[in-house]
Length: 296
Image (cartoon, rainbow, N blue to C red; front, top):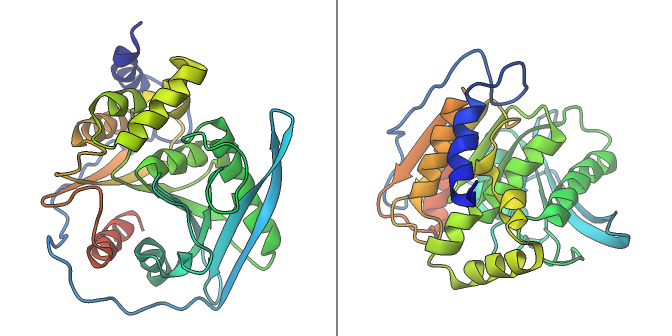
């Protein structure tokens, strides 16, 4: 079967699966459009200051080689659930800035501890940069477990995950591996890497996709494209997408949304006019406040 047809086949097939955890739920699909998101940046929101910020490097191995993954944790006072943040392809997280990012602030303001990690090749995380490949997927799981191990006072585990761009795929694969997450919030996502390789305006992303397929063949698409098989994702998924995003086109976000709904996920989808792949920090905070509230 041609690779470009697999995403459609697998999405429709997921609708017939029963007895599986994650996206197949009893409640059925629930899509909500028209969330109240402003199209212009508003004033800066009040800053939430964590009571404790911790970070470290956790060892892990792949292909017989030893690597380390950088993890970060922004802790609130008292018991709270935790959300994992996954970064896009342009840059990793900076330890001294992660708790001040609009995404992190939105979750902190909603009462979540915030954890994050750097994929291989970003920041102090070692290993080959692999575009959300198997090494990155292993690193995410190790980082989450090390965060919990290094903070034994935490009374609750991870409840959800968030990612933007290629980070959307990273967060989604983490949710499958970690299990028992309640929700995902994804923005500007790359859900089908084959389609992104043909249609994205991001030359660096296209070059990385080409490099991965040169090394791995067509299997590179299946390894990274969360849209090929949505089974096992959390039962609640909130997606936002800029209408003017040419790096991550809305077409694949539509296909991903439809595949989730076919698998009886509860899906909230928000497409925002005037927004591309780069979003003003104040507006991103406004968007995130609405999206986080939609999954609480």
